[in-house]
Amino acid sequence: MSCGRVAIVGAGISGLTLGYWLKKANVSVTLFESSGRVGGYMGSERDEDFVVERGPNSLLDSTPAFQSLIKELGLKDRVTYAQNNSKERFLYLEKKLKKLPRSFFEFLKSDIVETPSKFRIISEFVKSFSHTDTQETIFEFATRHFGNEIAYNIVIPATIGVFAGDARDLNFERAFPKLQKIEEQYGSVLRGMMKTKSAAKLFSFQNGTQELVDALYENLKNEILLNTPVTSFQSSSSGWSVNGHIFERVILCTSLPSILKTVANLQNQWPKLKKKDVAPVVSVSLGFNLPLSTYGFGILIHPDNNLKTLGILFPSNTFKNRAPQNSHLLTLIMGGTFHPEVTTWTSEHLITVALSELRQILGPIPDPVKTWTFNYPEGITQYNSQSSEDFDMLKRQIQNQPGLYVNSHAFGGVAVGDCVYKSYELARSIAPRL
Ligand SMILES: Cc1cc2nc3c(=O)[nH]c(=O)nc-3n(C[C@H](O)[C@H](O)[C@H](O)COP(=O)(O)OP(=O)(O)OC[C@H]3O[C@@H](n4cnc5c(N)ncnc54)[C@H](O)[C@@H]3O)c2cc1C
Image 1: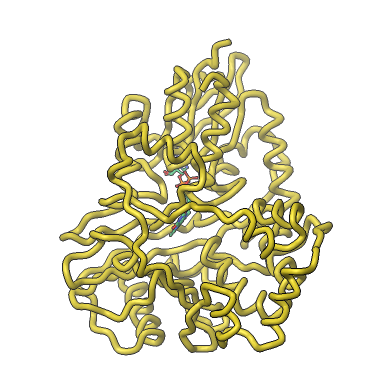
Image 2: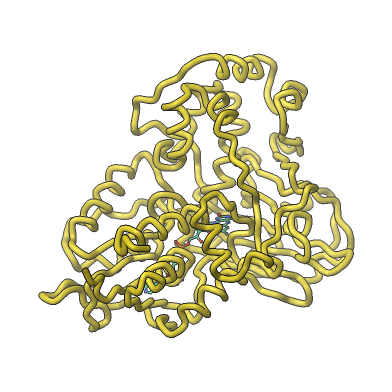
């Protein structure tokens, strides 16, 4: 059966990988991209030997699909893994920097929680829990397993590290489906994690994530229309009309606000976007031309410190070749659902606030020699409990339209690895011979 012509709206990592696999299966694809470049949130800039990421800094090679993609694109030798000295992670809690424990014994010795909470870890390991409330938040789930203090001191900032959002709003099942399966199968998160320990490693490419974006672009450049936002979209008797061209199938690979905008005219009763459904974020990178104290992979920042910074990454400590010799690159992720206003600030103001908060956390540091800011007002989709019925309804209503699909971080996982995996699965369902 012919798969017909397929339109892909958005050439971020979701659209690009989907386009790659569909093309490989001999499906005729056209990618519409509103901006002048592909990659969406993903991509890097090289500036005097600093390699600065626009968005994602590190990827996880958790699925065979991602690994074969890298091999097929000829990038296997370009992969660079996180260095050993980036294994440590820190937490800024109650205005103090604390090392996050990496083993049970380190946890017993650490001052992140009081002694009774340490016993909760032991009891979680031996008890069996079961999950019945589909609306349970990440915070409620963590409290049920580990008690309030661990949920508050550790799980809240750790969730910010993934979603830039609040564990007290995010729906556990939607945000962490793999963890839900672990609970279902083993009853205990700790027991389950020990049994299912994955060998997946954090990685990037020698010149940053741009290498993956460039390789996908090279493969698809004749199929991509840059500077071509989808502005007119409707169903027609012969298929779907996208900017006046007819396609048999259309796959929306954009952010949640953009998906809602694209489908707005199809029917009247789409769910309305709530304020906390997306976490606007800004990535601020600072280059220093002298050695600095670094803190492993990075520092999670508890929202109780009331800073605009959600976390600090140390890319030049994590990967080789991110900064010139004796120089350092730091990246601050700012805003999120806690401080969405940062995406309206000027670059100068962002850098001033970033430096002031950095000095509060790390102590005196010199002015940077280089600065970069990347602004994402449509940010990271939040799988909030309050909106979960709306999201389910949106997805169902889209799926009910023959030939219309969604495939982006807006549903089913925000990590790049999730986006790549979802693209592979969708491509296989459209072209089963893949
Ligand atoms: C600052 C930041 C740091 C992150 N760090 C990590 C990390 O370290 N590791 C990790 O795994 N994940 C990370 N993420 C998450 C991850 O980067 C994203 O979830 C993922 O890149 C999203 O890809 P996507 O293709 O689904 O969407 P996008 O990248 O948003 O791509 C959508 C594309 O659609 C285009 N578009 C929008 N509307 C239209 C339209 N109407 N017509 C045509 N084109 C349109 C946009 O221009 C864009 O190119 C981070 C995200 C951010 C913002």
